[in-house]
Length: 310
Image 1 (cartoon, rainbow, N blue to C red):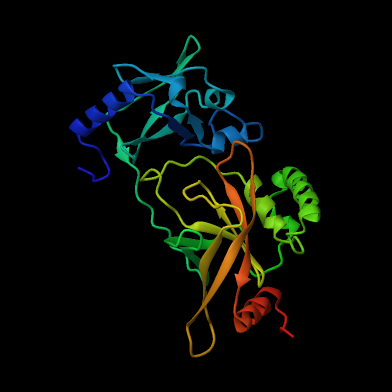
Image 2 (tube, helix red, strand yellow; image 1 turned 30 degrees about the horizontal axis):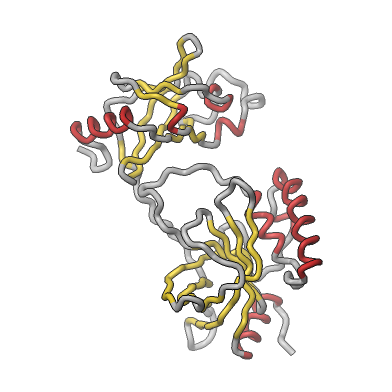
């Protein structure tokens, strides 16, 4: 028996769980290219990205057939295709492979005999910079909020507009114009260069992903850092930042030269501005340093600008 495969009794419990409750599922095609559809005309987005289906839009029959009620165009594009169906059972990520079928315009997938646990993927990336929010000044609460560089930005390089995917640039430009107009009135954005990665993050496509464990707390994303500010982003709201709240923050650098391997910089910083979109759990938080040692300011300035501090 494969450790990732549910036992017969476990499968029965899961199937009954699906029958009894409105359990949301995510459907992803196993083969993004249909054998019967020309690759030049197939609907790319519906083929590649997972589709989330709310619990109220499906019904599970006692025979293990999942009826997809009022399926959207994306789901209809999966007709007669092999798909992966993912969901959570008691916070544990599970999946099975099946096929989307239709009879008299009723779309469905059947639960097979084998259901698998989603494997726990350990991300292996080397970081030469990270942050840690360790203290909330207002409440005196100790924190342990790890921050790692967002994989789609290059920190300590001047943000470039071309870093934003072409298909997102129209929406990103609308956001940028809105944020620049607000910054001119509020006078709180410095030179405003950090707004580019903020617009990139908020318009970046984030496919729905079912993981091995539901609601696992992940590191925050670092979008930008210089000698005056740091901008972090949250994929999901597992911690609430409040305007003007102050925090203790440790910035850790791995040094490639010299006898010392790492350098830790301790600062305090205040929530300067919060950026988010309606009906989107993601948010970006711009922090401005309220205290930093002169030699640390010099170090970050030179790293961020590639210019000697004068």
